[in-house]
Length: 250
Image 1 (cartoon, rainbow, N blue to C red):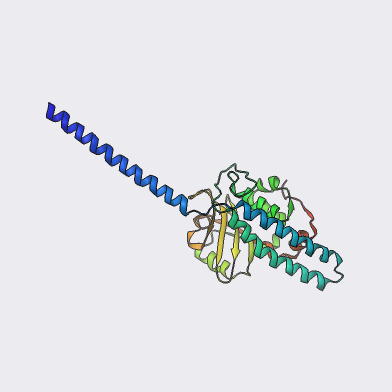
Image 2 (image 1 turned 90 degrees about the horizontal axis):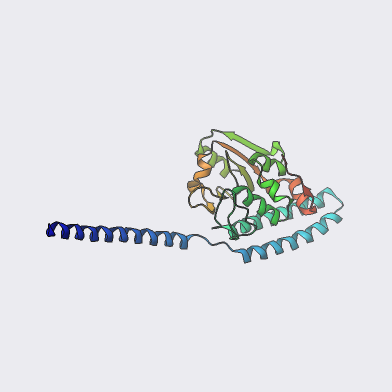
């Protein structure tokens, strides 16, 4: 009887040690994962916001004095260059900000943020005069159509993902809005490739910047609507002039 109790005690000690060791390994893995994750940068975000608004103001003054369509077109092109530089920089500042379905954070790292609020907040902070609460609560199609006419947005359903990636890689460079089945995000198109930037409700449950191979949310969606935000002259003109943008569906 004593031998059985001793064996049981030894077994419990070994089992406890193994459980503790496994838990320690898991904890270390989670710590390493958190350390490797990009951290939100609210200070850089504030500086970028101020800088972009200063530059927008300077362009806006020149735009108001432009007398010909050619002059206005040149300034709209300058606006496009600014937005295509600053918007991805804004996005990087949000990386690592936790996702939540009801998240409404107003700045990087200042709480949790849902996908719609990520898009709406970033655009508002970039100088688009839009109600971020109304915009964030709309279906993704309404978010795109708030800025872009339907004719400027492509919609595909059931398109093979590799075919989609190949097509997007050949598109004109720019910052695109993309609406999915139950999600909205940015796609930053370069020359031959793209980045998918969004507040992800899947692992790692935060704002992420993914290439095509890692963009699981984009891959799994059967419904994809895409529009080039920074190539649209009306969008650029409204941004320059600070025009109020009415939210579709609100």
